[in-house]
Length: 142
Image (cartoon, rainbow, N blue to C red; front, side):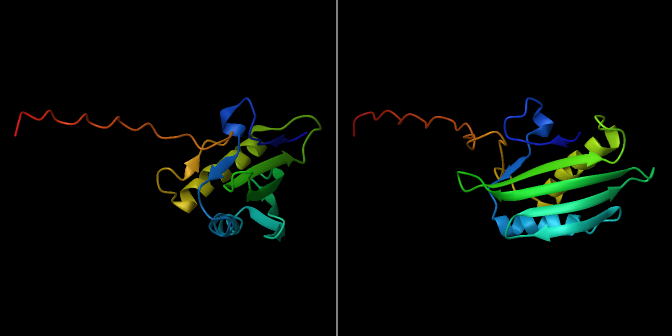
């Protein structure tokens, strides 16, 4: 059994990521992350937006990580991660969960995304509250 992110997941840390950034920029950052020690790229195709990685922790536990990236219905770049380890069936140990969540946090940092470019992963971009305009100053006869 594995864990995967999705837009409607009840756990906020498992809702994946949405970026107001070009797909190519996000894919390039993912590719750089995949070359980190402990990760091995098994498959990578930017046309389908799929990357499959093998992860080996310092403790020797192995996990398979599948990254899906693409444009959502609003044209924003969405990244979802699925991971499971090669251990006991039905159990996703903490190292496997952590490796997927860590990948998402590292992607955020690697992108150096300016404020407003990391969007609510569950749907439409949330509008940033803006202060109401100042009322016009009263005019005292000219």
